[in-house]
Image 1 (cartoon, rainbow, N blue to C red):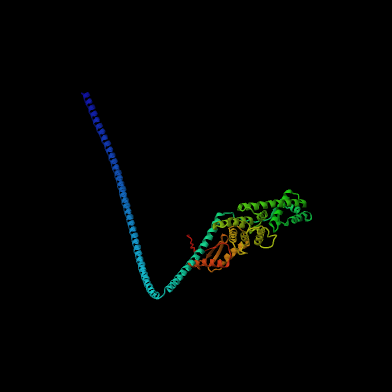
Image 2 (cartoon, helix red, strand yellow):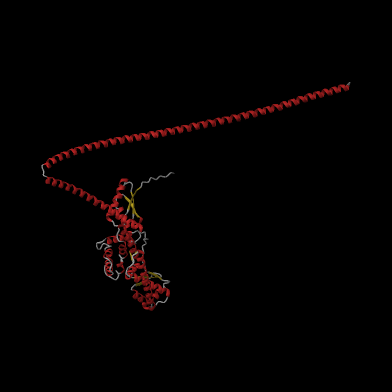
Length: 510
């Protein structure tokens, strides 16, 4: 019995333990389910909120997109309306212009009607005059009527011819100027020669200053021998390592220079050696002169010139005029004169021959008295040149009035060659004086602050005080300066006057 009770108690305890265990397990499951449900609900709430935000953002984006589309549509419509308004404005302007044109046309038509009425009145007067004249002529004989008719026709024809002659003279003057410009321009464009000014400075460089004593020689016998044989003056001064050869004749100066250079190379300087070297230098110069003359003759294309004249022409290779080589100048004058002759249909060979020999007198002007034009003319007469060529040589400087077209064209070609930019050098003092005179003329006007002569004297820039000179006065000031410079100064080409009026306002940000 006790065992049964114990077993029953044990079973009861076990049942109670199992019951409570089941309660605990159920409670644990209930708590776990509740936590899971809570987490799921929170998760669903979070997802719902995120979805809500996403939907709101999409709604906002859609609203913005719709607003932008509406704004773009409105902008396009406004642009379209603006284009329509512009077209309407243009059409209004066109209508206004057409209305103005119609009014102007009506005015012209009215004026033409008035003119027609005036012409009708004149026609009526002329008809009346003719009636009176016919009444008078009816009383004339046939001879008298013919005489009256011829007199009237003669007067009318004379008046018409006088008017025609005046028109032809004016047209000829205009065409002559245009034709002359065209011919000169064409010739210059066709002949594009170098314009390089030459400066002949006969200076012999010495290897050392000790050579000066050897050139002078004992008691000056070497330098006297060289000067007597060449006809030059040797200037030996304090200039380091240099001897100056001075002479009016460029041939003598070149002979002395070459002979002295040979002596310096040889090293043996005594009278006998000097005489030998001077002879060699003369032979060398004679050959150079001959070759230079022949080269110029063949370059121009005028063969058949006498050998003596070729030598004289070659001597111009050592002659300069205002820094311009005379032989090159003669060749250029021949080319330009030939082109001028070709443009007007004149004999090109005669013109080229006269142009090449126009300065031949300069080869002898150190030996013969008189202007080089007269010397050249006499020289060509002795060699049997035609009068047309002689006329071009004698009259190219205007000393003698040219009687043929050759003299006129050679004078023009000579002026063109000498006036080309860079062809001839200018004395520095004259150049500076011209710049100073230009600035002095500009500074003499009231209101001028300062002036600058620039571009080698081809432009003057004038700074004026803006408080004293307004824009209108500045324009008048430039015109007055140009007129005064033109009236008082001598200058080549043209001078540009630029008046600058400037107002500056300056401030500083601190």
